[in-house]
Image (cartoon, rainbow, N blue to C red):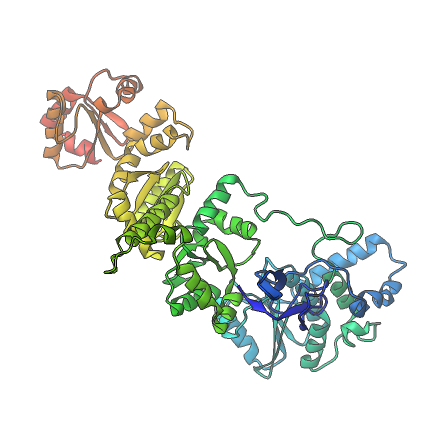
Length: 598
């Protein structure tokens, strides 16, 4: 928790921070340059203001008189259009959107931006994020400035999707703007400040903007064209609607709109470790620059932490944004409480506060302290503490196993498996059509080692259904080939139960050669089955068997399906070859091997 004596007081137009010693934030606050809000927190003998972990968001608030010039003086522009019909203005607005669409180029790599900057002319870059409303509004201003400044280059960089560029220029907040000239960076700006942006573009472009003879309000600077003015006016409207009387709409529960199962899954993940990081990728292979920075900080602090790769589960990725009321990643939780994202964690690390927060998280709970009180012996016997930690790990593993009705513990993610066995099982699950959750054991060594003991299963992947271990790759492969895997999901109510005919079709097509027999190839349970097994072994052709004694439904159903009343039955590529007599005749004539390999 960050405590300060001075609170940030932000202008909703400029997004610049000021200090107010010992006083609560201005009612107009909400767009501080680092996107942070403040709230009052109780403390013994003093007033404190605590950082609310909220990224850049324009909060709806009445516009203070000192900063309302953009709206008051915009009447000059509105006057020129008073005679226009609503249809005409709407058409003009649509034409503007079409015009600005090509004026700003999306940057796909650092090399592309470097090449453009190296040309030496004026170039401007807007770092934005799709979740950030101020970014979207400022992008409209930026795009119109691009139209009015055709001799300069304008670029748009999605910060989270281009971590290499963001890291190189030290971008940690959005909206953020860089200004280049003669091949070097000459200025930068952060925050949703349309007037300042227009002035900086004019200053560094080296020539006046188009239409500068039009009426332009002083609050937008002397460079704003009428079109920029209209866009800027729209950009600074409150993001959130207000009720009549100017009061803000009542805040909603952050978890509103999430299903109970998803909320339970998210809550379980958050509490699965005292320190839990939701990130892109995993600690050994972060998938974005912001995640990498937070991982490095946690490693420097020497703290043990769990992680969850939000790229592996889109439901969790989107749901957690609503659950925590925090729209970006990474997100760091300590004892179930959100600490914040990359900028807050980095700031806390610099101030030393993060170390204290993490140290508090490593202390045992009060209940555990009470349980251990008087139990530890003079020689420092820590057996009770060890047992308590094991119980904590087992509870965590149990929670993870039950996150979803079907849960796969694997190396990597379903989109990017890190081993062939995991890839095979993911493929089988996808073929069944069942919904399943996954956990990347490479991202958490404690889970990787602990689950082996918990399940008494030494290898990965491991598949769980309704909290029970089904098996590893070999077992899942056999179950899939026999149709038993899909049947298991159907019996658990996770899939619609397949018809007997569909099941039989899958069984006879599970491999190129399938023998339905009594018993198994190693232990035939009747003489006819034994004869056919021996004949097939002599051909040295691969074949799969199904024990009809293990499934009465299949035993009776296949007789009708194939119109063949006895066993064994041999199938090649889904077609019945025959029973014992026919197989033995084919062996004697030398036809059997060629029939099985054609």
